[in-house]
Image 1: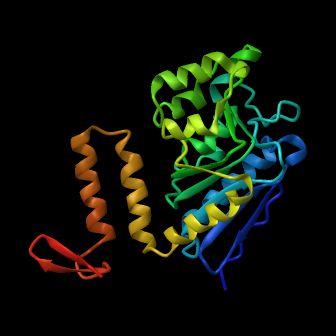
Image 2: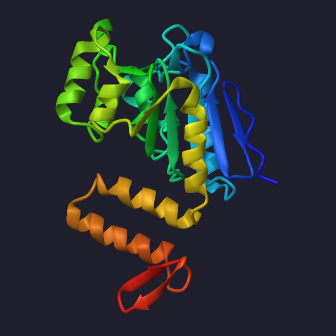
Length: 261
């Protein structure tokens, strides 16, 4: 039997025998925006996923027809610190890598993905989108600095595309096709194929040895904060830890070479 997932308030979570933890944002009446309950749910989710061996891959998707997520709930908001310098970035709750969860994250995006939705997308390992998906950051339209989400996005797509999204705000939305052209989205599918396709990708990844997969994710993401030389040295350590001699699915064919079976 798979491990029992934590009790959540605003997210539907299921863990099957396929080792895929499927998370469904479940506030369609609020366009799947996040409030404090959602933040608390995701802190619990990443803590659970990080230490649970039954979880090999995570899929994130959303209920409703209009939106994947429109970011922060502007009506309900979330808990703010009494002093500005003690304020915590929502990434502390929402972002898997920030929470030291290196299980691969596959995001299935439909409808609007705006503003704070980028906290999830910026740290996704694979993003696929329905044909109706649009991406935008409305902060400046409402007189707010667009900083945290665009900074994360700048690690994924060309800086010119980041600036265009951040500066145009609510006046322009990036289409799924354009997101695919610039490499933000790896695949665009008809809306009715979105969830099955995400599940298919996740199940394929979940069949691989999970330690090797997690160390692969970690080595690549951590390289973004390192020089090339340091990233290669750290990557070698992960190779040695995740794939010690005699434990991989490959066997040495010649010195320095491997035969895949």
